[in-house]
Length: 268
Ligand code: ADP
Image (cartoon, rainbow, N blue to C red; front, side, top):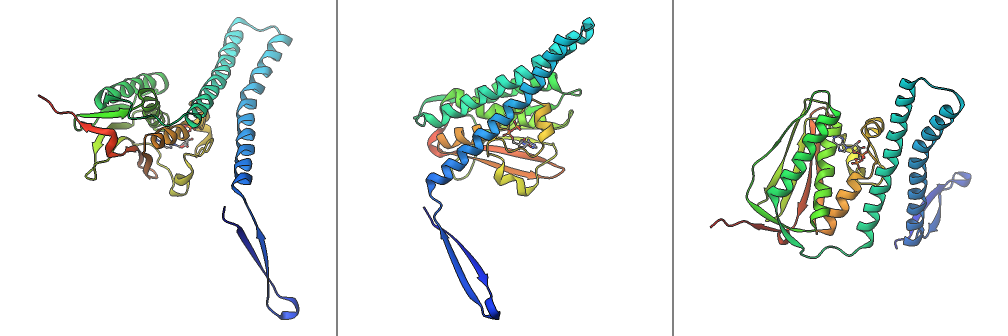
């Protein structure tokens, strides 16, 4: 690892001297700090819904409730339980992605089939959460086969799509498709007319639990792990995630995959 040099300028009696403190920040120390951060974050994320849940349990135990209130409390409790389930499921997904070898060439999957799947999920989601549903449509592209792990690819694509639905106000436009680049890479993209993301946040979006809009994330059931999952899946397939965004106009997220992962479908 690179030693970190911190240099302090001191000026005793007006004379300029330099004091060098050299500290060795080893990879092990960094990994340890990251692990501690992660555990603290997970604990915090679990504690919040647990506190709400146990608060409701105590209330229900201590005072008799009207039927309507009882139902409302139970709904709220079930939401919190659901939130913890989603968090645990995302954590397990991440740990599986980190702990297993990268998928080999895998199977060849029709790009349009993957797209149809995530579009139909997104339409279901907008019906469920938006007062005015979003306008969601595919952008037509070349007929392609993609090679990789189907479940992983679908989970990464769904994450991008559900973010577009969750962060774009109802009625907004969402477009998604596959595109072949001149350099032979292929990309799956999702563009939205949502709030956009300020440039300073973009490099940090794939950090676990990093959220730009914390309350919107929570309201719509976000765990803060979605883009970390997308990044892992892309990297395991030899690719990466790309983000272009303009505040007030919208964002485009893409998963770019290398030429070895794509084949043009030749019709006979
Ligand atoms: P979350 O579960 O909070 O959505 P993600 O890792 O999927 O976690 O995303 C991280 C953060 O990036 C989100 O909390 C949100 O602030 C921001 N974000 C992601 N996608 C979009 C989007 N399409 N438009 C605006 N902000 C987004």
